[in-house]
Structure formats: structure tokens, C-alpha cells
Length: 286
Image (cartoon, rainbow, N blue to C red; front, side, top):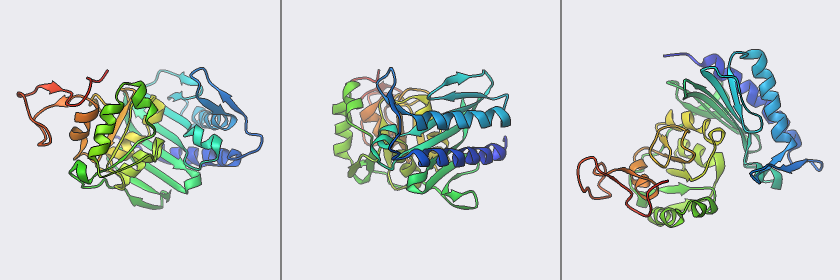
């Protein structure tokens, strides 16, 4: 198995610089906020963080490709860094301290290492393939993440970001059916939902519309903690444009509300035949 220790150390250094830049501009009276063509906000801090990360990568990993939210993709190498300079920009703009820099490394379209750093929460999470999932203030001061052992939706805690995305996708009724089945729901939102799944504090997190840079860094942290991260179609990884992360035990049951899964693998629903696939609630996933 490849060793990504040096890449992980570099990612922490990138996160240190990002934290310094983003924290310095947080709640700044002269923060410059613009609207992108997709009508989402971007600040001078988003751009400064990504530019800083790209400068360092150009020196330290000059052969690697980079995909970032603000500057798109440069390079075509098998090794690709995937960056979201500030995940939770709307929170950042409003002075809500729940936002983070997401840094991931993918090799041949497998995300093998990542760091998520939320300086205003005083928290950082990271993982590398085969090396476990961790949280703490540094590599030397950390504790291991482990997903929960909850096995029934009636005992599960569900986190999400908003209702609008589900409504726009035509799946709000399906999402609400899952929410009603679960024991508890909270809108922790964005990266935090998935970090709480990795820690075992939340059992299910889902969003219907996401970009690659929103998800890539979340995948190793959830998976190395023992969880499962797929699209709503059940495809592994951050490539599907939407996400479902669970402790693993609840994944198929959650997909039965939000996506399409093979029947007969879980006692929560009946089987109509070996290997058949059907959405049990609402429309088939698009």
C-alpha cells in the first residue's frame, strides 16, 4: 500500500496557512463579497486561501494536478489535489463560525488522503488510506474517529444542510419520510455533518446537490472511521454530484428512501426478487 504520510504532513501545512488567512478575514469590516455566475457567494478570503494553497503546491508538488472551487482544474496528472478554500461561505459571510478549508488528494480517481480544518471551531479532521481517521489540533495531539454502532433508523441521528436542495431535486417528500423515521434530525450542515458521522455523534448525513470539491475531503475521513460514503445512486466516492454518508449499518436503509438500492439485503424492506433494484419511496434517482 502506498504511503501518503508526506502528503498528509503537507496538507496540514496547507491547512495552517489557510486557517491564518481565513481567520484574519473572518468578520472583517472590509470583507469583499461577490456573487458568482451560479449565484453563490465568494469572498476575497476564498480566493486568497486557494491562491496560497496553489502557490505552495506549485513548489512542493509541481507535477500534481489541482482542482479548486475558484480556479478550476490545472494539470492532467494522475495525482490531483482537490481544494475547497472555504466550505460554508454563506456562514463565513454572515459571521457564523461553522466553515472549513477542505484539502484532498486523489490518485487515479481514488481519494486517498484529506484534511478538513475548521479554525473557528478549533477542530481539524484528517485521514489517509489505511491509516485511520483522526481529529485534534495537530498530528501529535489527536484521537481516532469511529462511527457509531446504531443499527436502526428509529435510533438514528440525521444531519442535513437545507430543505431547498431536496425540493429543487423533487425529493423533499422522500427526505422528509426518512427524517420522520429517524430518532433525531439537526441541520448541522456542510462539512460538519460528515465529520460528526465520522466521530460517531451523527449516524446519517445527506445532501442532494454537491460539487467534487465539496465532498472529496470528506470521503477518507468517513471511510477510515468505518463509515460508508456514496452518491444517492449508491456509487462509492465523491463523483456523483450528491452524497450520503452513514455509519455503514444504516446505509442501505437510508438509500431506500433517497436513492435506488438492491432489495433483499436489509430486513427494513421486502424483496420482490433476487437482485432487483427499485426505489421504495418516491421517484427513482435522477
